[in-house]
Structure formats: C-alpha cells, structure tokens
Length: 123
Image 1 (cartoon, one colour):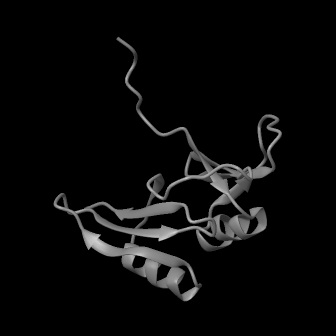
Image 2 (tube, helix red, strand yellow):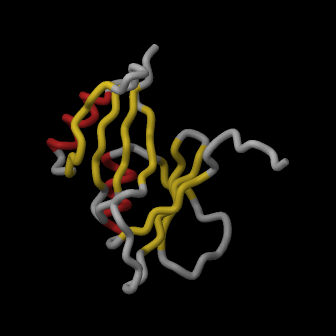
Image 3 (cartoon, helix red, strand yellow):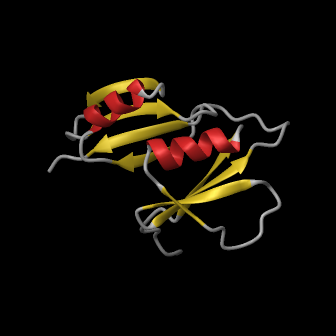
C-alpha cells in the first residue's frame, strides 16, 4: 500500500494574463512571490502560501479549463476578506456560508476565472 499524503505541496494554476494574476495573488491575496526552483518553458511565476507553493503558468492558447477546479486558502475572517476583495473588483462567485461542520466558506475568482475557496475553520 502506498504512503498516505499528508499535505498539499503545491498547486499549478493556468492563467491568462501573468501581470494581472501576479497583482491578484501577490497584492490582493498577499502571497509572497518566490523564485522558480527549476526551469519550465512556459512563462509564469511562483508564490508561497504559508509553506506551500502556488505555481502560475500562462495558459496555452488551446488549453480550455472548466471552473470546477479550485484551490483553498484558510483565513481568519472570511467575511472581511470577501468584502475587501469585492471592493477591489474581484468577482465573488459564492458569498460566505457556514457548512455543517462549522467552517465558513466563500468562493472567488482570479482574473483568469479560476475558482478559489476561502475558508475559516471553527476555533
């Protein structure tokens, strides 16, 4: 039997416009941009989210993705973060709601239409 996975190492996200995505992930979400550790021919950039990596790669012209894929970030106050992001013009695709386990979640979209879940776990 294979070893169980214990954590998310990184997520790779296809983006349409690198600079708009760099602004969204770096300035609006507050992630730290880091150097790419190895060569990939596609243009892009990497960010650090806690101790995990988010890799943004420019979407090839023929690549079509559905909106069903998403990544999730925890935050301390989902409602406040959603309000701040909405004020900055970010598309909110699911306003804060409480799941049956007490987690508050909301969904937003980056400039390329990728879905991002924001979640606040109960204390």
